[in-house]
Picture 1 (cartoon, helix red, strand yellow):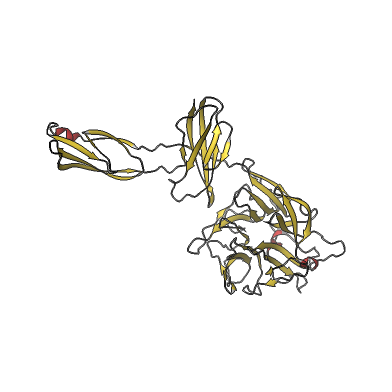
Picture 2 (cartoon, one colour; picture 1 turned 135 degrees about the vertical axis):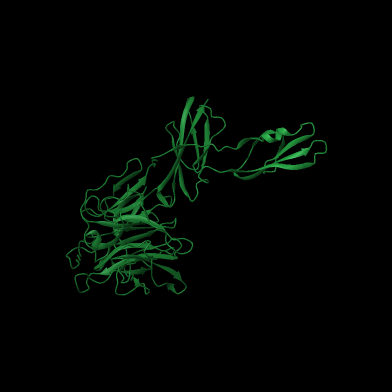
Length: 463
Protein backbone atom coordinates (compact mmCIF):
# COMPACT_ATOMS: atom_id res chain seq x y z
CA UNK A 1 0.00 0.00 0.00
CA UNK A 2 1.58 3.36 -0.98
CA UNK A 3 1.84 6.28 1.39
CA UNK A 4 -1.27 8.17 0.48
CA UNK A 5 -3.55 5.19 -0.05
CA UNK A 6 -2.53 4.06 3.41
CA UNK A 7 -3.11 7.42 5.09
CA UNK A 8 -6.58 7.72 3.64
CA UNK A 9 -7.77 4.80 1.56
CA UNK A 10 -9.18 6.94 -1.23
CA UNK A 11 -5.88 8.69 -2.09
CA UNK A 12 -3.63 8.06 -5.04
CA UNK A 13 0.09 7.42 -5.06
CA UNK A 14 2.56 10.30 -4.93
CA UNK A 15 4.87 11.12 -7.84
CA UNK A 16 8.43 9.89 -7.44
CA UNK A 17 10.78 12.86 -7.33
CA UNK A 18 14.40 13.42 -6.48
CA UNK A 19 14.75 13.92 -2.71
CA UNK A 20 16.27 17.10 -1.33
CA UNK A 21 19.20 17.09 1.09
CA UNK A 22 18.80 18.52 4.57
CA UNK A 23 20.79 21.60 5.49
CA UNK A 24 23.70 20.01 7.31
CA UNK A 25 24.42 23.03 9.44
CA UNK A 26 20.92 22.97 10.94
CA UNK A 27 19.49 19.45 10.79
CA UNK A 28 20.97 16.02 11.16
CA UNK A 29 18.59 13.32 9.91
CA UNK A 30 18.97 9.55 9.61
CA UNK A 31 16.63 6.59 8.99
CA UNK A 32 15.83 4.14 11.79
CA UNK A 33 16.00 0.43 11.03
CA UNK A 34 12.67 -0.48 12.60
CA UNK A 35 11.21 -2.81 9.99
CA UNK A 36 13.79 -4.53 7.76
CA UNK A 37 12.20 -5.35 4.42
CA UNK A 38 8.97 -3.57 5.35
CA UNK A 39 7.68 -0.06 5.99
CA UNK A 40 7.42 1.87 9.27
CA UNK A 41 5.20 4.91 9.80
CA UNK A 42 3.71 7.25 12.44
CA UNK A 43 6.21 7.37 15.33
CA UNK A 44 4.98 8.30 18.82
CA UNK A 45 7.29 8.46 21.84
CA UNK A 46 5.95 7.90 25.34
CA UNK A 47 7.84 6.97 28.52
CA UNK A 48 11.04 5.93 26.71
CA UNK A 49 9.07 3.71 24.35
CA UNK A 50 8.71 4.36 20.66
CA UNK A 51 5.41 3.28 19.13
CA UNK A 52 4.99 2.95 15.37
CA UNK A 53 3.00 1.11 12.70
CA UNK A 54 4.51 -1.35 10.26
CA UNK A 55 3.46 -3.95 7.70
CA UNK A 56 6.28 -6.26 8.77
CA UNK A 57 5.43 -9.89 9.54
CA UNK A 58 5.30 -10.37 13.31
CA UNK A 59 4.30 -14.03 13.79
CA UNK A 60 5.94 -16.94 11.99
CA UNK A 61 2.85 -19.10 12.59
CA UNK A 62 0.21 -16.67 11.38
CA UNK A 63 0.00 -14.65 8.22
CA UNK A 64 -2.77 -12.20 7.35
CA UNK A 65 -3.28 -10.41 4.06
CA UNK A 66 -5.62 -7.62 3.06
CA UNK A 67 -7.56 -7.55 -0.22
CA UNK A 68 -4.43 -6.27 -1.97
CA UNK A 69 -2.43 -9.27 -0.88
CA UNK A 70 -0.31 -7.23 1.53
CA UNK A 71 0.37 -7.61 5.21
CA UNK A 72 -1.88 -5.28 7.19
CA UNK A 73 -0.25 -2.58 9.26
CA UNK A 74 0.00 -3.23 12.98
CA UNK A 75 1.28 -1.25 15.93
CA UNK A 76 4.65 -2.05 17.44
CA UNK A 77 6.70 -0.73 20.33
CA UNK A 78 10.39 -0.69 21.09
CA UNK A 79 12.52 0.71 23.89
CA UNK A 80 14.50 3.90 23.32
CA UNK A 81 17.91 4.80 24.72
CA UNK A 82 19.67 8.03 23.85
CA UNK A 83 16.78 8.73 21.48
CA UNK A 84 17.50 5.62 19.38
CA UNK A 85 15.57 2.30 19.39
CA UNK A 86 17.20 -0.48 21.34
CA UNK A 87 16.20 -4.14 21.34
CA UNK A 88 13.57 -5.90 19.28
CA UNK A 89 10.25 -4.31 18.37
CA UNK A 90 7.20 -6.20 19.63
CA UNK A 91 3.52 -5.99 18.70
CA UNK A 92 1.42 -3.57 20.71
CA UNK A 93 -2.25 -4.19 21.65
CA UNK A 94 -4.18 -7.43 21.66
CA UNK A 95 -5.48 -7.02 18.12
CA UNK A 96 -2.06 -7.75 16.67
CA UNK A 97 -3.34 -11.27 15.95
CA UNK A 98 -6.31 -10.03 13.92
CA UNK A 99 -6.53 -8.81 10.31
CA UNK A 100 -6.89 -5.12 11.18
CA UNK A 101 -4.94 -2.25 9.70
CA UNK A 102 -3.78 -0.22 12.70
CA UNK A 103 -1.84 2.78 11.39
CA UNK A 104 -1.29 5.27 14.21
CA UNK A 105 -1.64 5.79 17.95
CA UNK A 106 -1.94 8.79 20.26
CA UNK A 107 -2.18 8.78 24.06
CA UNK A 108 -4.23 10.91 26.41
CA UNK A 109 -2.95 11.98 29.87
CA UNK A 110 -4.58 8.90 31.45
CA UNK A 111 -2.64 6.55 29.18
CA UNK A 112 -5.57 5.50 27.01
CA UNK A 113 -4.56 4.79 23.42
CA UNK A 114 -6.45 6.29 20.50
CA UNK A 115 -5.84 4.10 17.46
CA UNK A 116 -6.83 4.61 13.83
CA UNK A 117 -7.75 1.25 12.32
CA UNK A 118 -9.97 -0.52 9.83
CA UNK A 119 -10.99 -4.12 9.29
CA UNK A 120 -9.60 -5.28 5.96
CA UNK A 121 -11.90 -8.33 5.99
CA UNK A 122 -14.80 -6.09 5.04
CA UNK A 123 -16.35 -6.58 1.63
CA UNK A 124 -15.07 -4.54 -1.26
CA UNK A 125 -11.58 -3.59 -2.27
CA UNK A 126 -11.47 -0.54 -0.08
CA UNK A 127 -12.48 -2.32 3.09
CA UNK A 128 -14.26 -0.72 6.02
CA UNK A 129 -13.75 3.01 6.61
CA UNK A 130 -10.87 3.99 8.80
CA UNK A 131 -12.10 4.75 12.31
CA UNK A 132 -10.71 5.86 15.67
CA UNK A 133 -10.92 3.43 18.58
CA UNK A 134 -10.01 3.98 22.21
CA UNK A 135 -8.09 1.29 24.08
CA UNK A 136 -7.87 1.47 27.86
CA UNK A 137 -5.63 -1.60 28.11
CA UNK A 138 -2.86 -3.17 26.05
CA UNK A 139 -3.65 -6.76 27.02
CA UNK A 140 -4.11 -9.33 24.27
CA UNK A 141 -7.83 -9.34 25.01
CA UNK A 142 -8.16 -5.57 24.77
CA UNK A 143 -10.96 -4.37 22.52
CA UNK A 144 -11.06 -0.86 21.14
CA UNK A 145 -14.26 1.16 21.41
CA UNK A 146 -15.05 3.31 18.35
CA UNK A 147 -15.69 6.94 19.23
CA UNK A 148 -19.43 7.52 19.02
CA UNK A 149 -19.21 11.16 17.98
CA UNK A 150 -17.52 10.38 14.66
CA UNK A 151 -19.42 9.83 11.40
CA UNK A 152 -19.93 6.12 10.70
CA UNK A 153 -19.65 6.18 6.90
CA UNK A 154 -16.57 8.38 6.55
CA UNK A 155 -12.95 7.49 7.17
CA UNK A 156 -11.59 9.16 10.30
CA UNK A 157 -8.05 8.57 11.44
CA UNK A 158 -4.62 9.73 12.57
CA UNK A 159 -5.93 11.26 15.82
CA UNK A 160 -3.77 13.42 18.04
CA UNK A 161 -4.69 14.25 21.63
CA UNK A 162 -3.43 17.42 23.32
CA UNK A 163 -1.23 17.17 26.42
CA UNK A 164 -4.13 18.21 28.66
CA UNK A 165 -6.50 15.72 27.00
CA UNK A 166 -9.02 18.41 26.06
CA UNK A 167 -8.52 18.63 22.30
CA UNK A 168 -8.42 15.99 19.58
CA UNK A 169 -7.52 16.68 15.94
CA UNK A 170 -7.91 14.05 13.20
CA UNK A 171 -8.19 13.66 9.43
CA UNK A 172 -11.35 12.65 7.59
CA UNK A 173 -12.85 12.42 4.11
CA UNK A 174 -16.23 13.38 5.58
CA UNK A 175 -18.58 14.90 3.01
CA UNK A 176 -19.01 18.66 3.09
CA UNK A 177 -15.38 19.50 3.79
CA UNK A 178 -13.04 21.88 2.03
CA UNK A 179 -11.25 19.20 0.01
CA UNK A 180 -10.54 15.50 -0.46
CA UNK A 181 -9.36 15.04 3.12
CA UNK A 182 -9.70 17.69 5.85
CA UNK A 183 -8.65 18.20 9.43
CA UNK A 184 -11.35 18.19 12.10
CA UNK A 185 -11.28 18.74 15.84
CA UNK A 186 -13.31 17.69 18.87
CA UNK A 187 -13.19 19.06 22.41
CA UNK A 188 -13.65 17.08 25.60
CA UNK A 189 -16.95 17.60 27.41
CA UNK A 190 -18.39 15.95 30.53
CA UNK A 191 -20.35 13.68 28.17
CA UNK A 192 -17.32 12.73 26.08
CA UNK A 193 -15.92 14.07 22.82
CA UNK A 194 -17.96 16.74 21.07
CA UNK A 195 -19.18 16.45 17.50
CA UNK A 196 -16.33 17.09 15.04
CA UNK A 197 -15.80 20.59 13.66
CA UNK A 198 -13.99 21.33 10.42
CA UNK A 199 -10.85 23.42 11.02
CA UNK A 200 -11.97 25.69 8.19
CA UNK A 201 -10.56 27.08 4.93
CA UNK A 202 -7.68 28.82 6.71
CA UNK A 203 -6.20 25.36 7.31
CA UNK A 204 -7.92 23.00 4.87
CA UNK A 205 -7.44 23.18 1.11
CA UNK A 206 -9.07 21.41 -1.87
CA UNK A 207 -6.29 18.83 -1.54
CA UNK A 208 -5.31 16.59 1.37
CA UNK A 209 -4.68 17.59 4.98
CA UNK A 210 -3.71 14.68 7.19
CA UNK A 211 -1.49 13.31 9.95
CA UNK A 212 -2.11 16.02 12.60
CA UNK A 213 0.05 16.21 15.69
CA UNK A 214 -0.62 18.50 18.67
CA UNK A 215 2.70 19.56 20.17
CA UNK A 216 3.09 20.48 23.83
CA UNK A 217 3.70 24.10 22.73
CA UNK A 218 0.17 24.26 21.31
CA UNK A 219 1.33 24.13 17.70
CA UNK A 220 -0.68 21.74 15.54
CA UNK A 221 1.55 20.12 12.93
CA UNK A 222 0.02 18.40 9.92
CA UNK A 223 0.81 17.39 6.35
CA UNK A 224 -0.78 18.65 3.16
CA UNK A 225 -0.31 18.51 -0.59
CA UNK A 226 -2.78 21.32 -1.23
CA UNK A 227 -0.70 24.49 -0.82
CA UNK A 228 1.20 26.38 -3.47
CA UNK A 229 4.58 25.51 -2.00
CA UNK A 230 3.74 21.88 -1.20
CA UNK A 231 5.94 19.25 -2.79
CA UNK A 232 4.07 16.00 -2.21
CA UNK A 233 2.91 15.85 1.40
CA UNK A 234 4.77 18.55 3.31
CA UNK A 235 4.61 19.37 7.00
CA UNK A 236 3.05 22.65 8.14
CA UNK A 237 1.82 23.92 11.47
CA UNK A 238 -0.92 26.13 12.83
CA UNK A 239 -2.19 26.91 16.32
CA UNK A 240 -5.50 27.64 17.93
CA UNK A 241 -5.86 31.22 19.10
CA UNK A 242 -7.66 32.33 22.26
CA UNK A 243 -10.85 33.02 20.30
CA UNK A 244 -10.93 29.46 18.95
CA UNK A 245 -9.86 30.22 15.37
CA UNK A 246 -6.85 28.65 13.70
CA UNK A 247 -3.91 30.69 12.46
CA UNK A 248 -2.74 30.65 8.85
CA UNK A 249 -0.44 27.61 8.50
CA UNK A 250 3.31 28.06 8.29
CA UNK A 251 5.54 25.61 6.46
CA UNK A 252 7.81 23.55 8.67
CA UNK A 253 11.56 23.57 8.20
CA UNK A 254 12.56 23.00 4.57
CA UNK A 255 15.48 20.92 5.83
CA UNK A 256 12.91 18.33 6.96
CA UNK A 257 10.42 18.65 4.11
CA UNK A 258 11.69 16.73 1.10
CA UNK A 259 10.37 16.58 -2.47
CA UNK A 260 8.47 13.41 -1.58
CA UNK A 261 5.97 12.70 1.18
CA UNK A 262 6.76 13.82 4.73
CA UNK A 263 4.27 13.27 7.53
CA UNK A 264 3.75 11.65 10.93
CA UNK A 265 5.82 14.02 13.06
CA UNK A 266 6.71 13.59 16.72
CA UNK A 267 8.64 16.54 18.21
CA UNK A 268 10.45 16.98 21.54
CA UNK A 269 9.18 19.58 24.01
CA UNK A 270 12.19 21.81 23.38
CA UNK A 271 11.76 21.44 19.59
CA UNK A 272 15.36 20.34 19.15
CA UNK A 273 14.86 16.75 17.98
CA UNK A 274 12.19 14.29 16.96
CA UNK A 275 10.96 11.64 14.53
CA UNK A 276 9.05 11.82 11.26
CA UNK A 277 7.87 9.53 8.45
CA UNK A 278 9.10 10.04 4.92
CA UNK A 279 9.48 8.15 1.66
CA UNK A 280 12.33 10.40 0.48
CA UNK A 281 14.53 7.33 -0.03
CA UNK A 282 11.88 5.10 -1.58
CA UNK A 283 9.68 3.23 0.90
CA UNK A 284 8.13 4.77 3.99
CA UNK A 285 10.58 4.93 6.88
CA UNK A 286 10.81 6.63 10.24
CA UNK A 287 13.67 9.10 10.53
CA UNK A 288 15.33 10.53 13.59
CA UNK A 289 16.39 14.17 13.35
CA UNK A 290 17.99 16.73 15.59
CA UNK A 291 18.69 20.39 15.20
CA UNK A 292 22.32 21.38 15.39
CA UNK A 293 22.56 25.14 15.11
CA UNK A 294 20.50 27.48 12.91
CA UNK A 295 21.98 29.96 10.48
CA UNK A 296 20.84 33.53 9.93
CA UNK A 297 21.10 34.83 6.39
CA UNK A 298 21.04 38.46 7.55
CA UNK A 299 22.64 39.87 10.69
CA UNK A 300 22.47 43.61 11.45
CA UNK A 301 24.85 45.63 13.58
CA UNK A 302 23.56 46.59 17.01
CA UNK A 303 21.88 49.99 17.07
CA UNK A 304 22.59 51.81 20.30
CA UNK A 305 19.54 53.97 21.03
CA UNK A 306 20.25 57.66 21.71
CA UNK A 307 19.38 58.33 25.34
CA UNK A 308 21.38 61.55 25.95
CA UNK A 309 20.45 64.91 24.43
CA UNK A 310 21.65 68.50 24.39
CA UNK A 311 18.76 70.96 24.69
CA UNK A 312 19.18 74.52 23.48
CA UNK A 313 16.78 77.38 22.74
CA UNK A 314 18.28 80.35 20.88
CA UNK A 315 15.50 82.77 21.83
CA UNK A 316 16.35 82.27 25.50
CA UNK A 317 19.55 84.26 24.96
CA UNK A 318 17.44 87.42 24.61
CA UNK A 319 16.70 87.50 28.32
CA UNK A 320 18.95 89.40 30.76
CA UNK A 321 20.73 86.73 32.75
CA UNK A 322 21.08 89.09 35.70
CA UNK A 323 17.28 89.19 36.06
CA UNK A 324 16.02 85.98 34.52
CA UNK A 325 17.07 82.36 34.17
CA UNK A 326 15.85 79.49 32.03
CA UNK A 327 14.59 76.22 33.46
CA UNK A 328 14.23 73.01 31.47
CA UNK A 329 11.74 70.36 32.67
CA UNK A 330 12.64 67.13 30.92
CA UNK A 331 9.32 65.28 31.38
CA UNK A 332 10.82 62.50 33.52
CA UNK A 333 10.69 64.35 36.82
CA UNK A 334 14.13 65.92 36.32
CA UNK A 335 14.99 69.55 35.51
CA UNK A 336 17.99 71.81 34.94
CA UNK A 337 18.84 75.52 34.74
CA UNK A 338 20.47 77.10 31.68
CA UNK A 339 20.03 78.15 28.09
CA UNK A 340 21.85 75.02 26.96
CA UNK A 341 21.70 71.83 29.04
CA UNK A 342 22.54 68.13 28.69
CA UNK A 343 20.26 65.34 29.89
CA UNK A 344 20.23 61.53 29.70
CA UNK A 345 17.00 59.54 29.89
CA UNK A 346 16.91 56.18 31.62
CA UNK A 347 14.07 54.57 29.67
CA UNK A 348 12.19 54.64 26.38
CA UNK A 349 8.98 56.61 26.07
CA UNK A 350 7.41 59.91 25.06
CA UNK A 351 8.50 62.93 27.09
CA UNK A 352 6.98 66.42 27.24
CA UNK A 353 9.83 68.94 27.52
CA UNK A 354 9.11 72.50 28.67
CA UNK A 355 11.37 75.56 28.80
CA UNK A 356 10.25 78.22 31.32
CA UNK A 357 11.61 81.64 32.19
CA UNK A 358 12.02 82.26 35.93
CA UNK A 359 12.48 85.39 37.98
CA UNK A 360 16.03 84.94 39.19
CA UNK A 361 15.42 86.70 42.49
CA UNK A 362 12.19 85.03 43.59
CA UNK A 363 12.47 81.81 41.56
CA UNK A 364 8.88 82.37 40.39
CA UNK A 365 7.99 81.11 36.91
CA UNK A 366 7.23 84.08 34.68
CA UNK A 367 6.05 82.25 31.54
CA UNK A 368 6.61 79.23 29.33
CA UNK A 369 8.98 79.95 26.49
CA UNK A 370 8.82 76.69 24.54
CA UNK A 371 7.43 73.14 24.62
CA UNK A 372 8.67 70.05 22.84
CA UNK A 373 7.69 66.39 22.57
CA UNK A 374 10.52 63.86 22.51
CA UNK A 375 9.85 60.23 21.61
CA UNK A 376 12.58 57.70 22.36
CA UNK A 377 11.74 54.34 20.81
CA UNK A 378 13.37 50.98 21.31
CA UNK A 379 14.96 49.72 18.06
CA UNK A 380 13.28 46.64 16.57
CA UNK A 381 16.27 44.38 16.93
CA UNK A 382 17.73 41.62 19.03
CA UNK A 383 19.28 43.64 21.83
CA UNK A 384 22.63 42.52 23.18
CA UNK A 385 23.71 43.56 26.64
CA UNK A 386 27.49 43.87 26.59
CA UNK A 387 29.54 43.77 29.83
CA UNK A 388 31.37 46.98 30.67
CA UNK A 389 34.75 45.26 30.77
CA UNK A 390 35.87 42.08 29.02
CA UNK A 391 39.17 40.60 30.12
CA UNK A 392 41.08 37.87 28.33
CA UNK A 393 41.00 34.55 30.15
CA UNK A 394 38.01 35.47 32.34
CA UNK A 395 34.43 34.25 32.03
CA UNK A 396 32.07 36.90 30.72
CA UNK A 397 28.30 36.80 30.27
CA UNK A 398 26.20 38.50 27.60
CA UNK A 399 22.40 38.81 27.64
CA UNK A 400 19.86 39.15 24.83
CA UNK A 401 16.30 40.35 24.45
CA UNK A 402 13.79 40.70 21.61
CA UNK A 403 11.30 42.83 23.54
CA UNK A 404 11.53 45.68 21.04
CA UNK A 405 10.39 43.58 18.06
CA UNK A 406 6.64 44.00 17.79
CA UNK A 407 4.68 40.75 17.48
CA UNK A 408 7.81 38.61 17.73
CA UNK A 409 8.00 35.64 20.12
CA UNK A 410 11.57 34.36 20.45
CA UNK A 411 11.80 30.59 20.80
CA UNK A 412 15.51 30.48 21.67
CA UNK A 413 18.61 32.66 21.38
CA UNK A 414 21.64 31.40 19.45
CA UNK A 415 25.05 32.96 20.03
CA UNK A 416 28.19 32.90 17.92
CA UNK A 417 30.77 34.42 20.24
CA UNK A 418 33.39 34.99 17.56
CA UNK A 419 35.91 32.82 19.40
CA UNK A 420 34.61 29.47 18.18
CA UNK A 421 31.99 29.10 20.92
CA UNK A 422 28.33 28.65 19.96
CA UNK A 423 25.92 28.98 22.87
CA UNK A 424 22.13 28.70 23.22
CA UNK A 425 20.08 30.67 25.75
CA UNK A 426 19.04 34.19 26.65
CA UNK A 427 22.27 34.51 28.61
CA UNK A 428 25.56 33.31 27.14
CA UNK A 429 28.82 32.84 29.00
CA UNK A 430 32.18 32.42 27.30
CA UNK A 431 35.90 33.00 27.77
CA UNK A 432 38.01 34.92 25.27
CA UNK A 433 41.46 33.39 25.48
CA UNK A 434 43.27 36.28 23.83
CA UNK A 435 43.07 40.03 23.69
CA UNK A 436 41.63 41.53 20.56
CA UNK A 437 38.44 42.54 18.77
CA UNK A 438 35.64 40.02 18.35
CA UNK A 439 32.29 40.04 16.55
CA UNK A 440 29.58 38.60 18.78
CA UNK A 441 26.34 37.56 17.03
CA UNK A 442 22.99 36.66 18.54
CA UNK A 443 20.04 35.37 16.53
CA UNK A 444 16.57 34.14 17.37
CA UNK A 445 13.61 32.52 15.61
CA UNK A 446 9.94 33.36 16.07
CA UNK A 447 8.23 30.57 18.01
CA UNK A 448 5.28 30.62 15.58
CA UNK A 449 7.13 31.02 12.29
CA UNK A 450 10.35 29.15 11.53
CA UNK A 451 11.07 31.52 8.66
CA UNK A 452 10.93 34.69 10.78
CA UNK A 453 14.49 35.17 12.03
CA UNK A 454 16.33 38.13 13.55
CA UNK A 455 20.03 38.52 14.20
CA UNK A 456 22.23 41.27 15.64
CA UNK A 457 25.99 41.58 15.97
CA UNK A 458 28.21 43.78 18.08
CA UNK A 459 31.96 44.30 18.07
CA UNK A 460 33.63 43.92 21.45
CA UNK A 461 37.15 44.61 22.65
CA UNK A 462 38.86 42.11 24.92
CA UNK A 463 41.59 43.61 27.08
